[in-house]
Amino acid sequence: MMQRKRVGWWFFTKAKLSLNTYRNFSSSQHVILDNPNHSQVLVEGNGCSRMAILNRPSALNALNTNMLATLHKFYRSWEDNPDIGFVMMKGSGRAFAAGGDIVALYHLINKGNMEACKEFFRTAYSFMYLIGTYLKPHVALLNGITMGGGAGVSIPGTFRVATDKTIFATPEVHIGFHPDAAASFYLSHLPGHLGEYLALTGEKLNGVEMVTCGLATHYSLNARLPLIEEQLGKLVTDDPSVIEGTLEHYGDLVHPDSSSVLQRIEILDKCFCHDSVEEIVDAMENAASETKDAWCISTLNRLKEASPLSLKVALRSIREGTFQTLDQCLLREYRMTLQAIHGQISGDFCEGVRARVVDKDFAPKWDPPTLEKVSQDMVDQYFLPLSESEPDLELPTKSREAFL
Image (tube, rainbow, N blue to C red; front, side, top):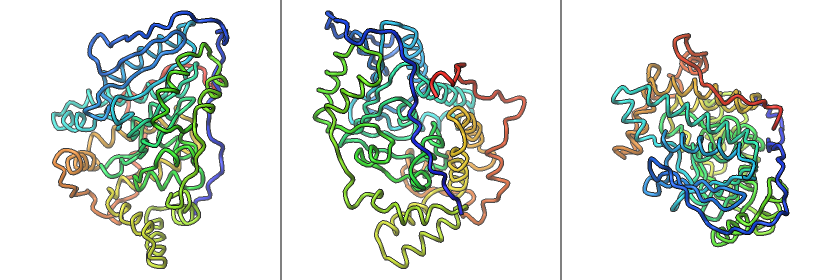
């Protein structure tokens, strides 16, 4: 039985810069700096801060390589600009970001364009590391759908504001993948075994639940976000405590209701503390049989709908993340991702995307089809170092001691 070491949340301590928090700022001009190549990333500039806007609302702001490369370029330049004190990010429409553009990846894989797939993941994971080690305060406004890669470009940052419109999930096991985009880092640091539950079921959390468990740092009603943005835009500071004070002043205090999974943490921990997926499923079956509880039955069904191979890979990934740093998790996730997209062990990723997003028949044919047929060797291959001919993930060179 896995005994989870209770670790504190990993809030990164950011380096302080040299801006004067209280200096006067006379210009109130609201500048829109469009990406010269396309309009999928917009920038609002207002004095001491910058706001990056994910702008693919028709695709729920699903991230692609160009968007991530553009974000990386902007964030690097803002980090080096002494006149910019802090950076914010939000999404257009009803999503912050629904994750990576898995449909585009699906078509690239089917065309045999593996280099483009690898470039997407290299660019994504590198930017997520930049967010997690950013030298300036970062505020992500998680208003709407925040899943997969959307969580990866926000949760490693300083502040995450959830709302009554926020929907968070890491649903990768249901498309034959594994929780990536730094998920094995932040999920492994959640209270008890909540991280395993989220990784293996892909269940959703709302904004109240996000702030309660620590995935978000603040909560606000959607209707108050324009006011919060306005107040943040007036700040002339690089001091995280000043930004935090504004978020707290205009935020809302909330508590999860009686139906929340966070009210079931005792039975959740009892079932998801086990060493193997088979033991977790058995525990959930026993709980469902004994209690006839709707949550237990629903959780059991979610486990049985997921890719058996993905379940075993995901559980090991979360457990390893407990003892790894952000960069170590991203490096390991990249190696795991290459195994998944190459499809030599299993074609579950393409099959999962086909069934749930492309054809939408919601009847994936997993390979292997059951937990019993997933061998230890198959799981182990996801965690092997890359071959000498395969370049590893290169992360931005920074001294981690500056901010950890």
